[in-house]
Image 1 (cartoon, rainbow over the protein chains, first blue to last red):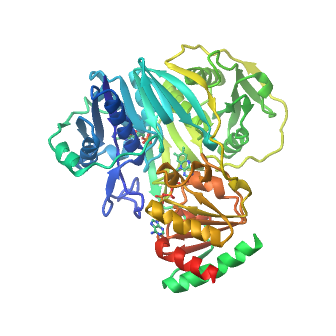
Image 2: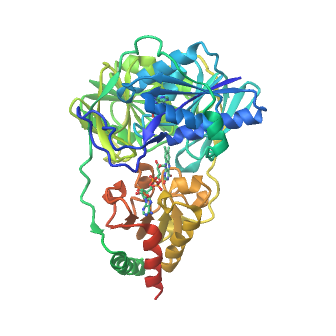
Image 3: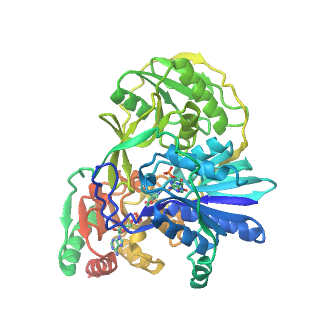
Length: 256
Length: 305
Ligand SMILES: Cc1cc2nc3c(=O)[nH]c(=O)nc-3n(C[C@H](O)[C@H](O)[C@H](O)COP(=O)(O)OP(=O)(O)OC[C@H]3O[C@@H](n4cnc5c(N)ncnc54)[C@H](O)[C@@H]3O)c2cc1C
Ligand SMILES: Nc1ncnc2c1ncn2[C@@H]1O[C@H](COP(=O)(O)O)[C@@H](O)[C@H]1O
């Protein structure tokens, strides 16, 4: 069995974002990059399948982007993936989901994957499109927003998360694309020995396999929303802030 | 321009979000028609054309059937815009439809903009205008971004369609209700919630202590629940509980849309966050800037005096 996990590297969301020169995406200066949170759940799921099947499945991590994304791939290897594929692409950040999906599908095409795992969405773009597009391009079955996952008899039993915490249960025939939601599992931290081991695992650059598909959409403008004037902002010395807040809370809680 | 609005049905009921789709179509302008995939008896009370496809023979949730029904209705209606709500159903079916049409998809639209659609990005901190380059466009609208105007409008002109269908590898086996909740946050007058900003499990205690000092309940954002630090029964948001307390205190919570959806009906919101620009500031009546690990015990101590 072969499993592909798609990993995107995104900025730490605690950052302050500023538009790039063209005003079409964020500028990368001063940003710290890490693995997309949802993709950590995807990597963890792939490794759990591998462990449950006695190590037999081969797990490949794939990322499209500039050289920095190899750090996310090293992390995936340190978590337990067997090998990594890097599609070098300095323009990846501004490609639309269809183009990204086309590149993934091309790389996946002849490599015989039974299962493709992606995040439910990327934290910076939040489109939730790449996974289902990859499924459409490869002709795989697809289940999205999965919070429970069990593999057996050539299919996966998954539960999709719905509003209000309800779930829908599905059986999905392989080959399949499954998009992973937060809470599916608790992603492991790579241990130091595994980080060392990961340095020796294969991380290969692969060509995107021709010109990318035409973009179907583009970001015309990236900007900071004008935030509705919030209420009162309290800042300053700790004791002062605590005192003022205690007064407000006491008053509000007593009328509650 | 003609927009096809795709209604959502779950557990045999029409979801009320069709009113938001109608408001979106109103804001967009041009013609609009609706599509219902389900029993005709569920038809929304609205004037104009309503395409109706029966529910799938393989159960209510059948993405291949839904995709086929939307493609058929879009073709018959000659729609160039197809709109869903960005719900767990909408974001699953929309990309299948976009792929089937060769159309651009714009997800989680919050507003209509010159030359495209405005959507949130970077966890809601930033916005972008997405300009589609294809003639037909699929959009999913953010729940709450286009409030329904209310009021039943009339009777639809129903046209039945039969999707040309090839079942795929996805088989629906049933719904599962949300896990029973130990606490009913919906009735609590005071809720103090812990977010990822608490940093570690032990710090949930200082949030719980403040909740107790205020006579309120402990709530939590999702990452805190996913990490197993707080029970799911206390999660506030789209996939947790919807609350409407008199006082809501958000400790170390950034204010993602899925969290806001669960607490925006609170009467008074106090946020404690080290980031002055955190989006929670948009809905907070009071934003205290600082480290909760230091602030909370100091506040609790004062309240106990
Ligand atoms: C389909 C779907 C459904 C979802 N449903 C829900 C839901 O029901 N409920 C929910 O909450 N989320 C939900 N989410 C997740 C949501 O998108 C956010 O990821 C989540 O709400 C973020 O939680 P947070 O604010 O606690 O964490 P973060 O976004 O990581 O924010 C942490 C905040 O803490 C602040 N902070 C850090 N350290 C300190 C400190 N020492 N002192 C003070 N402040 C500090 C930071 O400045 C930051 O603002 C859902 C997501 C999806 C995709
Ligand atoms: N550049 C990329 N490289 C590899 N995988 C990606 C990339 N962009 C998106 N993905 C995958 O697609 C998922 C959904 O992304 P999106 O459609 O952008 O929200 C992510 O969680 C990743 O698993």
